[in-house]
Structures are given as structure tokens and as C-alpha cells.
Length: 330
Ligand SMILES: C[S@@+](CC[C@H](N)C(=O)[O-])C[C@H]1O[C@@H](n2cnc3c(N)ncnc32)[C@H](O)[C@@H]1O
Image 1 (cartoon, rainbow, N blue to C red):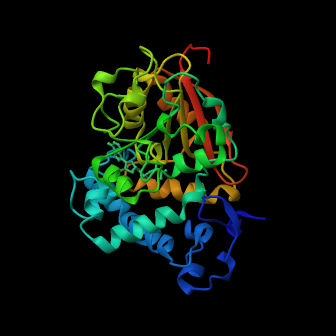
Image 2 (spheres, rainbow, N blue to C red):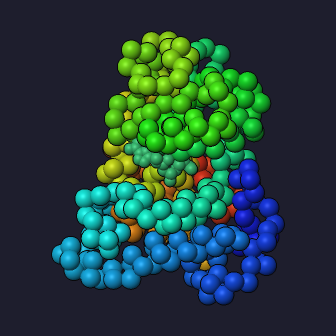
């Protein structure tokens, strides 16, 4: 089975799909886009690749000339996307939200690409179980909480301890997650900006607004067992990733791990790497990028973290990069 016969089902796992049956001329002609691999019946991924990625790169040479520099775009508010809309200084999402149709299509496209970075099936989250009061996993920038749901689904020993999972995101996303009601009530839903001090580090006094404080009162100086960041790092430049990771490192204890779920590019790319390479180009538009294993080391090390292992999914470039505090013996 090849990659282009796989699409996510509702649980984010892959199955033989209707992809090949999709004969829309737009999808057929967009063979050079990621849509070839994640084509969906609503065509939102194709539309997104064209509208958000290709149109923003159409005048890339003019963008570079206007910037007067040949360096890679690395600023969330100053990149080919913000330049295209003449709105430097705003983040991409803010600009996208000005056009509800564009935002909706983007969200549908993102959902269709769930399987590009699988959540479970290749890493044993079960081993993160704790017998004390510590949090098991903090999903940083976790969106709707689909990762927490998938992890609890796949690991019954963790599913019985929802109060030891924390979903963190910006206030709007946390409000949406609460309203959706899909996560177990006891999962802690916490407003948190990942550029600021990480509150889950065993000190109850610094906790921001969240629904359940008691479960987060850990033994002194005990960070969570795992801080999980999925589909976040590829949105940002190396310097910004290191800032985000440094906040996690500051909250960790010697047996904590950071788990980065993202695509991991091969050092040398081949035809099979096309989806990841196409995604790398798409991320360039907003000042981000996909990374190789060495690329991840480059953002982890200045944050005081050490790459332990790259756990690869059974297909595609989706992977989980495990890291610990430099010098610690997890
Ligand atoms: C591409 S989505 C990934 C969501 C989720 N991790 C997933 O895999 O589907 C990026 C997420 O980061 C969140 N985010 C963006 N900036 C943030 C910040 N400064 N602090 C916390 N979350 C942020 C967004 O609200 C969004 O939910």
C-alpha cells in the first residue's frame, strides 16, 4: 500500500480510502501538491494548498526583493503570507480569520491532514503512568484535545486517570474545547500561552485559570512526566521553537520528557518524501519549516534539552521526537 491510498479515519488512523476514486480535475491537476496525498472529498486540502501556499509563493522573488535579504522567512508576523496581504505585524491566523471562508477551509484542511502526524501506534505512552499526584501529560497548544483522546483510547491504564491530563491552549481554543464537551470532564483544560512560564511544574500557587487545580498540586518541584507538542514546532523558526522549548525545560524535572510530534525529514530526500517536502514549502510561507533529526537537535540543545530518540510512524514522515533535560538519566 502506498501513501496516496491512505487517509485518516475519524480516529486519526489510516485506512484504504476513496482517494483514488476522487476524479475532480482540480485534485488530479494538483498532483504536485500535498493534496495528492491527503485529498479529501471536500477538496479543502487542495484549495488550501493553492490559496494559502501557492498564491503566497507566487511572487516570492518580489517578497525577497522587498525584504532586501535572502534569509529564510522566520518571523510569524513578517513573512510571505503577511506580505501578500500587506498586513505585516499580524500573525497568519489573524489575517486568515478576516475571511471566514478561508479560515473554515483551512481548519477543514488541517483536520484532513491529521494522519500526516499520527498520534498513537508507535510510542508507548503507557509507560508515562505515575503513581503519585503528578500530571502524566500536558498537551501544549493541544487545540481541541484530539491527541489526549487518542492517547487515552489507546492506553487503558491512562484512560482511568483523566485528571492527570492537561490540555493547554489560548483562551479561544480552550473555550471551544469546553463547549465541544468531547474530552472527559476531569481532563484539566487550561488557558496558557506557550511563550510564557509553564505553570504545570508542581507549584499550585502559579496556576492560571483552569477547571481543576487540586490534581495539579504535585510533590514539590515535580514537573509533568511528559510535555507533548504536536504540529506546533513546524509553525515556527528555530529561535521561536527554542523559546517555547526553554519554557518546558524550565518546568521539567529529571524524569520528565518533551515529546514533539511532527514530521521528521530524512537527511536526504527521495520521491517518497514528497509530502513532507511539500509541507516544508507550505510552512515556509508563514515563517516555519519541517525539520530533520539534526534540525530538531538544533532547536532542543539551546533550550537545555537533549534528543533521546526519534520514534517513527509506520508510514510517511510522521514521528515523535523524545527529549530530556540535558545530562539527566531518564
Ligand atoms: C496547528 S494547531 C495544532 C493543534 C494540535 N496540537 C494538533 O495537533 O492538532 C496549533 C495550535 O497552537 C495554538 N497556539 C498558537 N499560539 C499559541 C500560543 N502562543 N500559546 C498556546 N497555544 C498556541 C493554536 O491555538 C492551535 O490550537
